Amino acid sequence: MLESKSRRVQDYVGSLEFDRRLYRQDIAGSVAHARMLGRQGIIPTSDAEELVRGLQVIQGEIGGGQFVFKPADEDIHMAIEARLFEVVGEVAGKLHTGRSRNDQVALDVRMYVRDEIVEIVGGLREIRQALLDLAGRNSDVVMAGYTHLQQAQPVMFAHHLLAYFEMFSRDDARLGDCVNRVNVLPLGSGALAGVPYPIDREYVARELGFAHISENSMDAVSDRDFIAEFNACGAITMMHVSRLAEELVLWSSSEFGFITIGEGFTTGSSIMPQKRNPDLAELARGKTGRVYGNLIAILTTLKALPLSYNRDLQEDKVHLFDTVDSLKQTLAVCSDIVRSIEVHGDRMRAAIQDYVLATDVADYLVKRGLPFRAAHGIAAALTHHATAQGKALGQLSLDEYREFSPLFEKDILKLSLETSVMSRDVPGGTAPSRVKEALRTAHVRLEESRARSTATD
Ligand code: ARG
Image: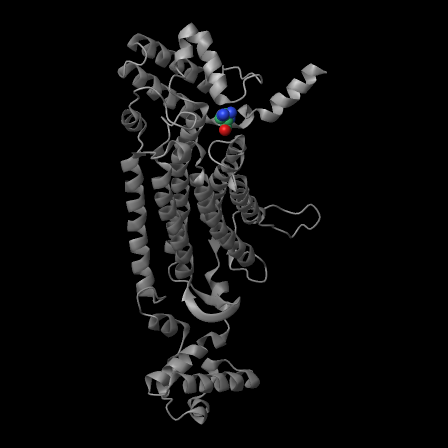
């Protein structure tokens, strides 16, 4: 009875099941700490070397899959320390000098987030690259641009894709900013008050690649803002993914028929043989929910926590890990989906309703001196007239145009999708020359992001 109770408690309190993925960071942190203890004469150098050796052995064991995780070890920190006793003997007891699991775990999680941000930024680059390639391959395709999911004005398909490039570029920048607040060394804060040994925090920070050391020990052991911030970045990225996924679902429907998603990323129906369901895009859209949940979960865990460390904080990792996994998988799969897309430019063009040129008719009159509001009224009346006649704007004769305004000349008959997009020749506009230029600079920006991350690797 007693035994089963303690087992129950053990299971409840333990985190080894999920925090074992921090083993690399935990060992790297311990190695730096042991070296510092030796350098500072807090423990003999030979002991420090023995600790480092033992830690490296354990790293090999865990990496090689030979390490036996025992449920009796509460978390990854305890599991590694217990094994260290077996590998190097009693000297293992010196590793925890001037350190607490409170600053240790804060350190590990910060290193972990820092490492994963590099991966996720890589995933963002992958999807940005896939979007650029798709845009580049279809740079002549014109489609209707939508507002309120109603056709509004013609745009270049590449322009539409580049909008997503911008979203994912901001996500890259956001993570780059987030990392500045992650990259602060908490070690040396002890349990909460600092430690009574002459430690060298700057040395440890340099060894582990931290840009700063924390300023306040009580804050350092209880601060998880960086997880909330990271989860918020993840939530925003998933929101972007969900928007893209939604469009892919719409576009691949038979009603739109704008694209075909590669066979590997759709599934057939067991009942309806004609179906090709965009399950992967739907799942990407669906996983957004859990990533939002992870943001709310960490915020709720942190809410009203008194200083300093509280065991509640152990729960921070569950949601962090889930956001990391969801993001990495989703970005990779979505990049594959985008690469698999076959674009039906003819369908996109055929689907464009004639009235998307109505604004151009108004703009035509404005350029000939009419105030925009008046011009808008005439264009609306013309569109009504054409619709009533069952004609396209382009099928009206010059005489019909002139019934609505004497300002119309022969060149109004030249109005087309092409003249429309070409006229949007402003920075950020959809004129084909602007879009080609935007594609070029997007490639450069992607290279810059690549260079930034190889520089920090
Ligand atoms: N597994 C714990 C966590 O993730 C480690 C810190 C435990 N500290 C303590 N004082 N019990 O937060």
